[in-house]
Amino acid sequence: MNTENSLSLFSSGDPISVLGLGVSGVAAARLAYAHGAEVYASDASEGPTQRDAVKRLTAEGIDAEAGHHDVDRILASRLVITSPGIAPTADIRRAIKDAAVPIVAEIEIAFRYLKSHVIGITGTNGKTTTTALCGHLLQRAGVNSITAGNIGRPLSEVAMFENQPDWVVVELSSFQLADVESFRPTIGVLLNLATDHLDRYPTLECYHADKARLFLNADEDSQWVLNGNDAEVLAMADAVPGRKYVASIAVREELGAFVNDTGHLVQRLDLDTAPEPWINVDELQLVGEHNVMNGLLAGLAAALAGCESEAVGVGLASFDGLPHRLQRVGEYDRVLWINDSKGTNVSAAKCAIAAFQRPVVSVLGGRHKGESYASLVPVLQERARSVITFGEAAPQIVRELSGVVSIEIAHGMEQVVELAREVAQAGDVVLFSPACSSFDMFSNYQERGHSFERCVKSAYGENSEYEA
Image (cartoon, rainbow, N blue to C red):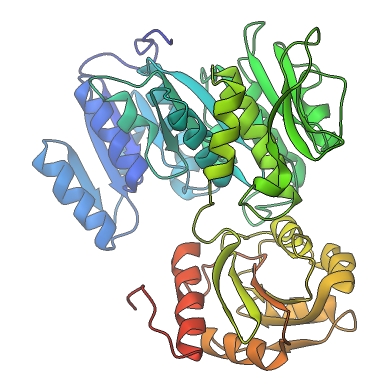
């Protein structure tokens, strides 16, 4: 387990500032305050979430404000802890950098007070599913564990537990990794590398450089679980110290996990012994080859954390996925409707379209994130009956995909469903995997996915479980 290492960050009584009043910022403020810091927390936004956070923190004795940053106070801090949603190009971040005030991520301060072993999971796509799946495997095997990080529960919250778990499975975004210093997972998992977040990063190389910070503090005791079918993943980890295990859809003569010739997922943690079986691919409840890879990666991490192969198999077979990730909405008039609102980049949408053998009506749109949609052409030509597009990105999607497949523009979610229903034929899939962020019309991908589900159910005369 980790040993407490907080003194290099700050001492009791030191002025500490926290940027952002979302869940991670609130948790970081509480953690720093609990360890004696004089904490000031602020957020430039002033919505209900921020106002509620100010009320709660103030009641606990922590100085907090919304709608404003006290720049002078922040620049006089011993340390600034930043939330991942605040871009490096934000004025306040630039001012902090110019003043040479140390700045770290919330997960960095949490790690300094964490006594648990850490499984750190990052990659462009599949992070949340793989994190949740790995946590499911550990818990089904009886391992004292919890999931945290970008998946919802801040790592700082876990660091404040009186009885910390033996293992924490942490979902890590590139935004979080950008500001780590000493963070070092016991087991690190790199799922894949693709284009994303070019609305925030100047180049793809800059985005991948932040992903590479997973390996920043690697040593000979580190263990790495890698996607063996992704050449960029293998290249990034090539010179990294530690023991490496690869996951592959095809058989490999290496340490790791793969799908064998009979379609079984198997693990091989010792080259001197025969591979140990988990389950057959057909027993997975998750859809698509990319989710087979997610299962291999999560299973490997769980096995390295001490789960027996039989327990890994049982856990893989019992995991039925997460909301908004290739989630079944329903089948009406022999048309299957799928909510994959979490598919917020082109690579994710491509994987989702390829996951189905049935003809696909592909729904694309939202706020453009800086990458071309042209790489969707081959899979659309192979699988798609039609494309329905909506939102701010619709004109660009039409320009790039016109002539490839029939395409129509919808204005609002109700019309998305109406047009998709008109186009879809019996046996088709209507796939809502937008390849864009949600922020043109919705506050997050969850709200967008709920809207899609409500409209589908309403179109077929069903009541949705979600409130408007």
